[in-house]
Length: 192
Image (cartoon, rainbow, N blue to C red; front, side):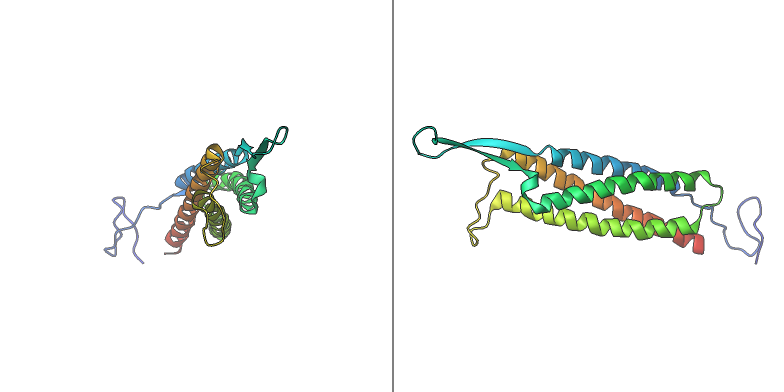
């Protein structure tokens, strides 16, 4: 095995690669994940709209008020739970990333567990986003085969909130995928 000279070239003719410390990028992505999951959570929780409908009956039954709330759809409750877990997870793993930045020798064990739990969170976020997205699509388009009417033509504000939350949740899932790739690459660089 050759030794490395001051210029970075080894005596056996191979170029020594500088150690790459990607924990700062990891930390920034985890902060972004926290911001995305909390903002999607807030937008989803504030999705509520009331609307009055004419019934054609005599007063006092002439007008009926109907609410659209995220609590009425199980897929949105699932998204809410996934966003709560993602927010808590990102908050906890920020400290793991800070520990890895501050330590002089980064632990491969931390990287392995981050990969494992990041992959688990990708699955949770992707499934919750997919189920909520399918319900949002039904709200926009309806389903004529099942006689389900679209509701977004009547509840504009509610649908905008839910749609925004689903889009931000999808971006959060993409950030989690990037974290898995980044941690896997960091672990790979340590093994070669």
